[in-house]
Length: 129
Image (tube, helix red, strand yellow):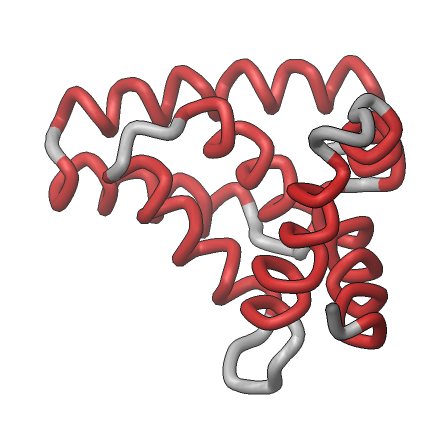
């Protein structure tokens, strides 16, 4: 394991998804699932989110499209919240979701809008929008 990359990955994961989410994900595991959390931090977040090829907003847009296309709506909701945290505007997110509907299919777009509405309502209730 590359400890430096794991730490950088955990840092960006916290920035995008928030400390509460990451603390629950990492603290809710056990010895059996701990290697998965290390892999997520080092490989997914460390390698894919910390290079200088794309900024966090661009990565968020890509994730929303890929997660909608692969019907991973739980993860879509997490990353929609992350996209807001990364500075995407309501207009940018709306345009992205319309693009998802066109290229991933209307049912995927309908579901993406449904999840986005729920996340937006949660965030408004938390005062984080």
